Image 1 (cartoon, rainbow, N blue to C red):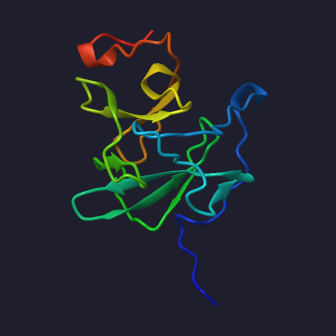
Image 2 (cartoon, rainbow, N blue to C red):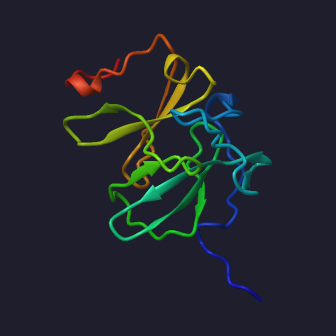
Image 3 (cartoon, helix red, strand yellow):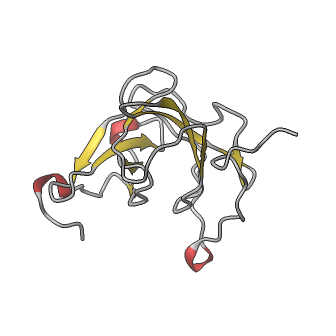
Length: 153
């Protein structure tokens, strides 16, 4: 019987706060490549959002839950919590757009665009620290102020 990778084990279904779930159904890199359904990995029946993650010693695909606020992911990597990662498009092999930087913590935020309008539309900004779940859901009227040292509102 094959052994299971702990990063691939199914966890209980995601239960959103206040009973409202935001489900990512489209996801794009800055060049318009789809990041959805690159693999057969699903979370609660929904296809994963996939990115390529690179550290000093590892490189591989990471499949993220498309349920906003759900911390589940699937991968074959063994990365220490808090390790800095570079995040790439798994299709075009280029870095995702940096959309903000927290000067105090050093955390960078990278764009997964939610519409084909890319830079002009809505996005999820994901952190470049492994297991840092402080992602941001932004739309075209939100401003990312952390890169100037001002706190988010």
